[in-house]
Length: 272
Image (cartoon, rainbow, N blue to C red):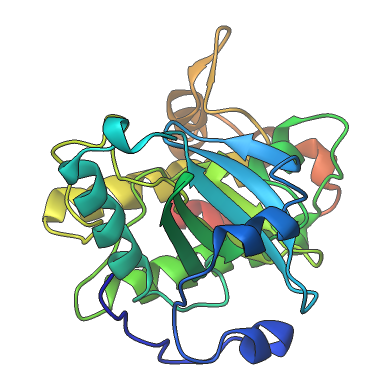
């Protein structure tokens, strides 16, 4: 695999010490040890299984390993998409992004994997919509909203802009102190691995789409409601009553967050 560009800004703490020169190639044996023989499953996507691991240095990682486990089922197009994805993600270095730390490609046993930073506090979706998860107060929600916006701005301002293809509250991860981490963990950028570019932002429609999705995530953060319900339909349709002057701010805002500054909440609503 070709050399990928080192990060423009270094990672902090253990990660900076562990990964100095950019995106390294890691051995499968290293990942097996880190992920306890790939038994530590934390989730899955349409193209990969997700594992949590801990490197010998103590650095916690998330490993996205392709669901394809045989070379005969891995096409040249798959390989091209995989390599383009790594090249694309290597351009992104931001405190509010699950930065790419490395990759693994081996033939025996067949392995194609990407290694990312690990965010230990689950997803934004879990904290907003699952009763057992710790709820987030106003200040945490404001910080999350701003962190996501900063990350998207950084990705858009790259020389070759990059946009995450799957962008919603299930792909926003949180750190221990509730800093947002935008993720892009799919091995390729569409569910079939076909007809997709390297993740670069190539048209105004891509930008418009991610801006619209960010608005929906903001509505989830403000209201605590899922994006669609049988009773109320799409969240943006339900929330439109507030923007049309038919709903008070107190009715819009998630009551579980407790007290909140009305002026700041109204200002965030204007972003939507």
